Image 1 (cartoon, rainbow, N blue to C red):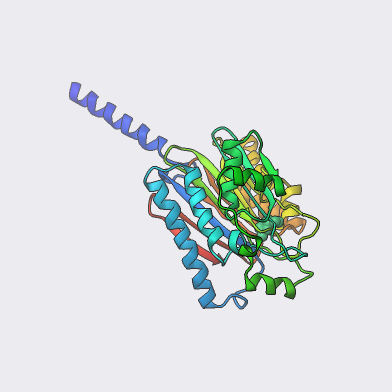
Image 2: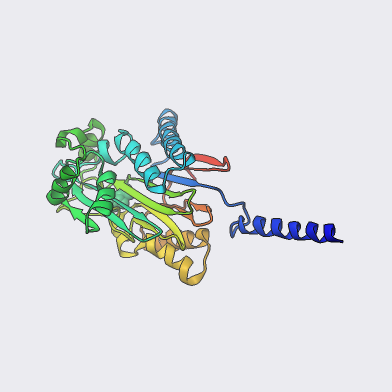
Length: 325
Ligand code: ASP
């Protein structure tokens, strides 16, 4: 009788543990999750040939491996985001760091932000032209200053004081971006990098880094450095990083809206992010997409453009690297 009782107790305890480790969508909760993007746009299969597609996929995969190894070894979500985005910033394929797009005046003005979900602390830099890795500067603003956002010259002075690597503005020059400015002097173009993470400690964080939009003028600042627009993280709900036509993402506070729909309306991550990107934004012509991960390790990567460079990996071994729908 005693044995039977013990058996039943063990069964129910195991059932409870199993139940707790399941996410709202019924999948076992992964230990960690990393999702990245490399920008969204309306390029078609013909605009990016197969060789170029493979090149992009290779770099996205390398970025994932870098972030995953940090998380596997017990690193935090902030460490994983910094290493992953640093790699994408240094890679000349993406519109962040090294190959940032040009402004109307032929300069580079970079934006980046970071947010951590357990205490809603955040940091951002905007319109900087001499910091090699803007995401690292954004992290420093969060961890080593009393402020959330710094812009232009002031941000550069702070970054220098923090011992960050500074570069001459010519560092950001790439022929490809220069030609693209000349080609499309009127039509703005997309491209950005982002990373969202759930780490082993159950913490969420999001980071975004960009050169902004080609041909921008008047020190225009997009959504990427704006907390709630291009970046948001909250341990109660999810972590989000956006890419697309920044003005729409600012006006519709896209990243925070997704979190709010989950918090106040009880929507799942997929429902909330689909509603914001493919309904609300699509209706008003706001092009772009987001990557997101929730507190249970569910992910979403909706976009309303032709393509979005994107990839994710989970501790369970699930992995995908993709460009088109
Ligand atoms: N969202 C960025 C901006 O508006 C650009 C992009 O994601 O492509 O500055």
